[in-house]
Image 1: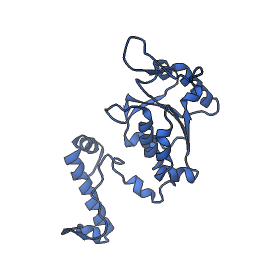
Image 2: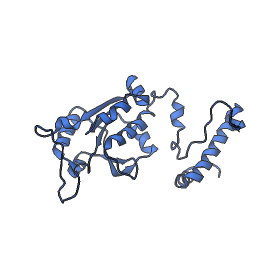
Image 3: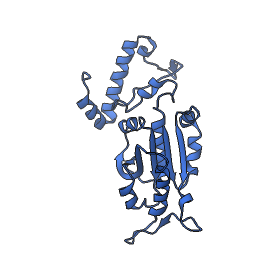
Image 4: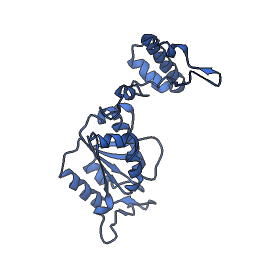
Length: 234
């Protein structure tokens, strides 16, 4: 998979992408990740990329020309399955969206900044708009980190134990069950006996029930959705 990211401040992402699971994906040649500095396409001697918005609003907006030239340069080299703009008014990111994106070959991500990007760029180039939550960030770079991390960790071959990613929270619309590690007793608290039993069927039933109860108590919205789609005995 190839992911290209257009950013105003590429340095914000460099450290994260050079570590952890994303680093593993890149080192294995499974993920080709590239950050493009928008200022390379800036206008004039000062490489201008933003200007005041029409209508008298406060703040600055990323100008259409630098973004257009950057996108045209990239799309002349390859066809993108999705051109994603990260914005608070996009569809809220969830695991199903991440799963579908992980199956694609080429993705282009546009990071907004300041008050966002000129609407004409959204109208002409963007094919998908994503929000990572109902709050506002200083720029799309941090949102891009979240999106790339979520996608890369479920690409086959990135994580050595692929079943680990498939059992994560939200993969089946349920929260994950409690997890324990050694020692089996800590500060008077013991690991549930079933997890020490080695009986796979009983362990799976316990985990399913715990996930069910945890979701029902903590995320009734998810529980309702899961209940409508599942045949798990309630």
